[in-house]
Image (cartoon, rainbow, N blue to C red; front, top):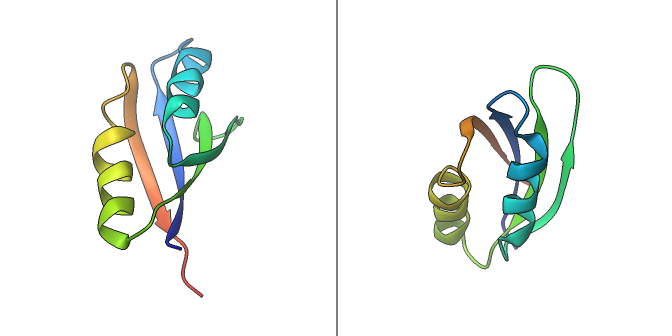
Length: 76
């Protein structure tokens, strides 16, 4: 099953709001607020690589107050 880790930058003070939005997405299996260069780390799984790309580029980025993302696709 294709998997990716997505690092998310949010607007200042909106980490909790974005985290809740991420956790509502079916394909987001885990999501945590982190400290450092990024605000949130999410693990995303999907049935296909195309679905994984759609979730990471469309669904995650559509969440209100997300500023930018960095997606790291897992390979084995």
